[in-house]
Length: 590
Ligand code: F6R
Image (cartoon, protein in one colour):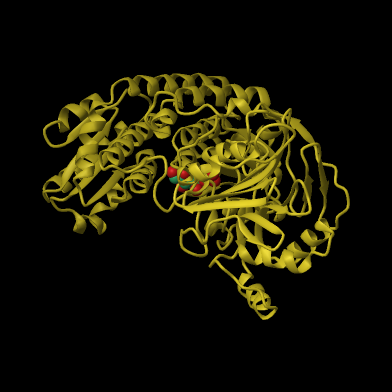
């Protein structure tokens, strides 16, 4: 949700480093891109609407040792050249990720002060304020400016009088990376330059003065602040998409590895004793997240109900703050987030923590905001997920949650089952011919309904999200039993219903849904792990028989099958599955 990057180099060309960084950061927004470079002739800024590639030629001509860059996901002001960052005024250039909630009032004030605004963005007020507040002391101007801002911001600021970058963080993510070539700042660790070997994560309110040699951290009162420097190996993240045509396909093929690594990290890195105490003593368990992470909670709720015998509820994080939930000192909150930066999730679990709950983060990103809120973190080891649509991280979340749910029973048996089901995903991905058939049906339908019962219903909800976000076909995930209570009215020969049947005890009832749709001339596809169901329905529906597995763990396999259907549908319609329109990864605004 907007990406910012900056580098101050001892050697090399900062413009080239920033351009490469923008390509890596593009998953955070692709409405426009821009960069400012300190050259021998002063600061030069180039920016373009659209993809980062549009900037390539202009960036190629620039050179200097300090530069900042931005990829935009538009919130205020349409995607265009003029609304692209960096925003420049007087001696300053700024890149901003976040939202300035009081920008109207600040803009009004600056307009009265004689400033002229050239964009429709909220961010431009920051650069206008900096100009007003600056009289030679850069840190003081930065502190004065951010004191006026309400909202969230990660900033990279260049000033003509300083051969470096000022970074500011409040509620939006930014990390500072150190390495042999110099110092970098970036929204996400995986997008840092390869030469970075250690990172510091500023705290909310911090202001950081970065030069090629050093970075000094200050709190909001400009008192020196000591921030821990941790070693990393940035090169491990920047692995490209290899021979795959899209990141989405590559990442789906990393599912089995994700399950394995998530299991390994659970036993290696998690404070299992403390986590077991949380689970054993929980009077209720609340699973929360947004989008796909929430959908992982829908599946996992069944793990906990089955294993822990405790009341378990799943809440959409963006609604949780407005829901009356009962919290005690024994309530366990499992905060699910790939990025660990989703503002709604971070805010929701912060307030539950304040109310006394134990908060456990289930996340793919160490050092992220959610890990700082949580009492404990359970890592999801999907590795960098570049495709905007979550795939391997969803399955990794399921694996981590399954392990947690088995802490008070036989955790080693749970691990074995997970490794087995990971293998089934590998088996599935060796033969996806049926995905082509179902994708073709999807692409030719005006709407696609995903239906199931029990865990299959939870998968249906995720399958629907995946299809709609990357193919732009209307879809809905629905309990199969609810069909006749309303949705059946929408079924006609132009709609497709995809019915997921992986639980033998519910199969007959799901077959009823197949008949109900088929008798209204609706098209039907079936994804099933059950041979008998596949055989029975082969003349009524397009059937994909997926590898057999237990009903409880079947979502690991059926969800991947449906990710493949979504992927193939999007590609057949000429959509870019990695960068769906209007979306961005890591939703750091509320
Ligand atoms: C859908 C998708 C989103 C995210 C949601 C939460 O494919 O990726 O729905 O799941 O924005 O993001 P995280 O998991 O980073 O909190």
